[in-house]
Length: 436
Picture 1 (cartoon, rainbow, N blue to C red):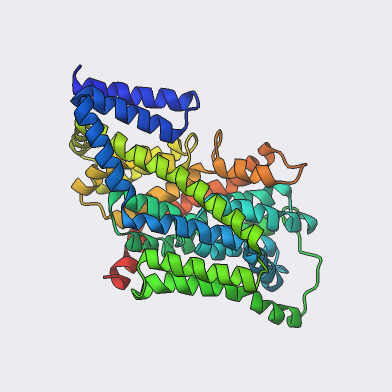
Picture 2: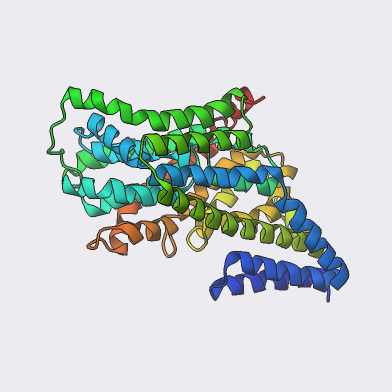
């Protein structure tokens, strides 16, 4: 059979398998392996499969992934996220919409140790939503905030998605992590302004809170900021200063969070074992997807589909900006059906050569892709963040309530995405000045 036709049939088979519910890692792996065997034969195909899997999986940069995952789980189980939210609410909770803004701030701070939108959203659905509702916030707004603000954790380092993107494209993980700082802060600011506007134009959504906080209580709460502060200094400061590589920053950050969780949060062996078990489970799942994606990428190259697609894109004459906007729209659509790592694993190996050929700045493109993907995390019918939040929400909160609450934040995220596309320096300035 013609290799190009084999490649097209492979793509159709992939989407059919995804449509009937086959796990993305299994679907990519099966299609990639069978496709390579069909094109180059059994012996050569098995040899290429073995070498591709081995060299990709033994990349030493992979160690950063389980370390960042462990950091987030330790912070969650160790009570660091709850302490951060409680402290922030004491300082700005009295402002109309203040508890919502405190949630955005806590998600931003927690993002410095989590790196996962799903983890961040799930944690604060349990921590902040019940308190917001006790203070009269509408359930749609409360759960809409946490579902959406979780995306900040995928921009602020240590962003797990930036690590995955770097491993798929072989771009500097350190550069990608630093590149996410300004877009992450921008998204937090857009959410903050949006919540204030909503609270003041429709007071029933977020009435003034009823509790009284003294200045003594505010000052006493400052001690609850230091766990997040220390982890941020270790991870972001270490990479920022060039003192740590991303892998070393992950190791020292995980150690710092572990010590804080044990001596400050009272973590004991059962909680630590739970964090370690979940880290292994999540890491194994991501490894399966990434190795399968690499095999699928090799199949696309052997079939000629990937080079043909790149040439077709270049012949369209879209230019760098046109391609970036087109890809952002594509990810907005795919985000309604696939999870973030699956989207990257399927598309980046195929499209990235065109990005390089057009000379598009890799940091700018990465931040546009990551934010566009996370708009999809709150978009029906899949909207993984929404489903994750629903899993821990209060009994009277329906899936429709949460999706309805995310609608204003969907448009806020589109605004932030437009700003990042219009001003590439937001993504490129820090890596260029700090790490180079």
